Image 1 (cartoon, rainbow, N blue to C red):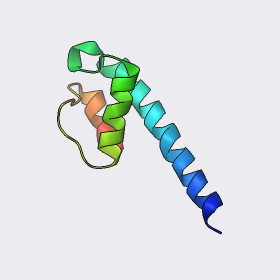
Image 2: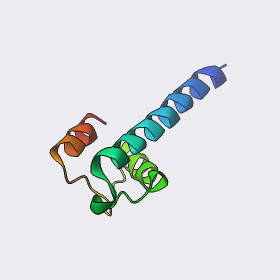
Image 3: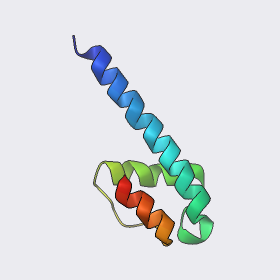
Image 4: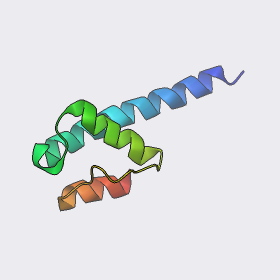
Length: 70
């Protein structure tokens, strides 16, 4: 009975991770450790799941603001 709700939630999380990862790649760039969009998506996944290994962190104020909103 909950399959549809779970699918909608997972779709939302997947879209958010892709959009935020791509946005952080554009804002931060390779000099901050975001060397590609897949690496940025990895960062977004670890941030959303509150694992946050600390291997990639935003350096700009705009990047930190976006991270705080995530």
